[in-house]
Length: 430
Image 1: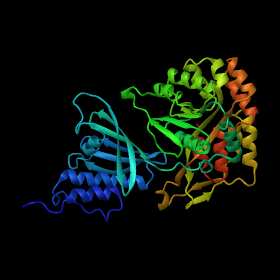
Image 2: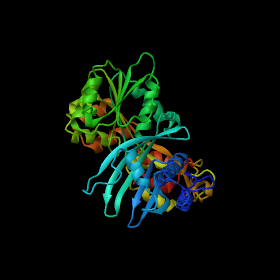
Image 3: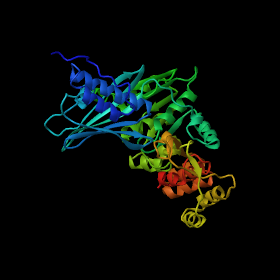
Image 4: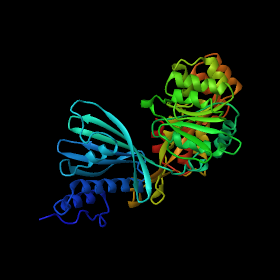
């Protein structure tokens, strides 16, 4: 007898675990197992979009496959199923232009694909990695065509924002956004482009991948396999008469040198770099063998950032601090940070909270994330220190004297405003 309805009904399923159980039960009624797996994959992506997931992980074990989502920077279990019962990962492999099954030799694979769910297009960067129990898939999720959030809403304080706007309105120079992977660097760059984009300015980008599309901006996608790298693309862009160029990432000497030279010849370059602090950007460039006099002449500033979890507004509760511990901890910091944080803790308007846990935040006490920022603005003294190859400690101290707020200072200040917990703030900058 032919199998019946080729589609399973997941309308009553409220979790992915229920979706998988319903799919297993529907195997005997559906006519096409691949179609059923496609349905389940679509439910996975639908759930990921609804929960604002940044990454999807398929973790293979001996007999089972575990599905996890990265939500607000933390991995959360979603479901587990027997690997042989539903060919979901082979379907995703095909979408990413991989062979349906991993090669017998141990080789990692990288690809990307786009899928539309409920009218929303999602681009995924796919990575397949061979483990002793089979193929592990990790997918980075990007909403295609989404609008970057306004810069005022990502957590930058008014005084830092004012200084940032002054810097990026410079006619030339290079500005860096630094931070760990997944810290929102690209979002910050797009916000800057939104501010700079106007009829009398020619803005171009080199990205991998293009995450947002902005009006009046010419976006370009890197294709390393075709030889269109950041360095090669930047050489070409400079022949296009740009005013502002956004380079997705400076990751090697060649790209860094071209970008710095372009900044010295009248272009405004915005880019990202991997460094843990704003002053660490200078150290990273020196390690790339960029000459100090070039850095000194081109560098106009650096913004270091991280994302920290926000306390859930539905279950936030006031929390009492331990004054003795705070005083002991503050004494371990440099004088500039001591003075600032002492004022924060002594301020009667400071409101420290923590989340008790509720259904809205999945009992975690946190919901959503906000940025913490450290802005290093180039000054005559900073440029002179770079030129003289001063230590990073000297550059940092000069910046603190000029009013730079460190990541720690910004994180604790946000905790004092009830936006995050003190524990989360300190953990983020540990």
